[in-house]
Length: 252
Image 1: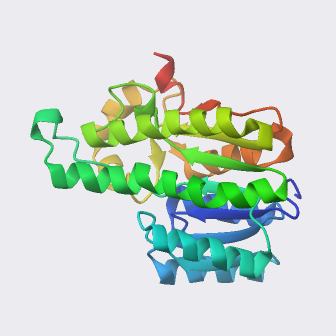
Image 2 (image 1 turned 60 degrees about the vertical axis):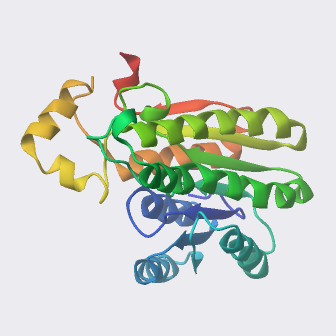
């Protein structure tokens, strides 16, 4: 308890899955949490649960690929809590696993890049000036094992997550003197609503488990714990790092 006391955190894609788990855990650790997503009803349900447990949270409807929406999220966060200490860029979508480079059409490519990569650019672009005024902060970008190895996901998804990885390092290098840390987390196979359809098919699940040394699928809380560490003062000397939370998949 209290590892994030007095910190204000924006968490995108917070209606369910890893984002919701992270929001819940952050509130438990004392953070004031701003949940963003397009799914307003689910966010409000989670906000109510957080408040019932004594936490502080608000929800803001948010298209992460929209600069205007990012302006609104920033402004509503400052209005509610007066500062921004932490940004968790979690929102994302997957691509079509059946489509290699030659089969990926421009529409799918652009949609995945906008939601997975452009959104991270917009997030850091909007919060860095605020963090500089505050004297520092922590940005955590959720990439993927597909941002580390070429076999981790669909073509467009892999490209977007690789971009998140190096965007993270660029921010870490350029804003270290401002005491702004920026790290990426690279989840492997995690139980979330997005992965549920695939994990429900025994043949696909068995194939996934063959590539995971720990031989089991991760939980959303596994990513939330990593986010807590990187958002907290415990990681004060950690920036530009890639934290794989993948059961050992990327060790191959």
